[in-house]
Image (tube, rainbow, N blue to C red; front, side, top):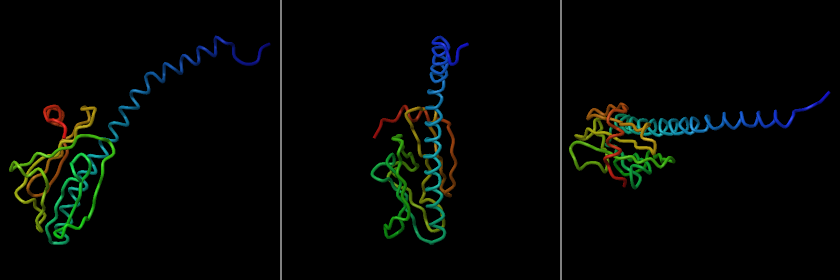
Length: 161
C-alpha cells in the first residue's frame, strides 16, 4: 500500500493548474482594465457634477481645468483660483475634451446658476484597450451622461498629447 501521489498524478495536476491559469490570466487583466476605466470615468463625472454643485451652492463661478493635461487629472477652482478639489489619474489613459464652441477645450466654466458658460461638449476617455473607451457628454445646463458611442472611433482618430 502506497501513501502519497505518483509522479504521473503530480504532473497531471500541475498540467491542469497551468491550463486553468492560461485561460484565467487574460480574463483577469480584462477585468482589471474594465474596472480601472470605469473608476476613472466615474471620477470625471463626479468632479464635473461637483463643479456644478459648488457653483450653485456658493453662487460664484467655478472652473474645471486640466492638471497640465486632461490625461493627468482635473482641478476644480473657485473665482479666486483656490483649488476646491483635484483628482489625478493612475491608469495612463488618454483623455481629451471636445467642446462647442470650438477652441474652449482648455477649461470648463460654470456660472453661479450652475450652467456652463456657453459650452457643450464631450470628454473622451481612451484607455489602451479601446473596448473600454467612453464618452462623457455634457450640455450647457451642466448635465452629464456617459456613453460608449463613437468613443473608440474618436480615440483612434485623435493623436496623443
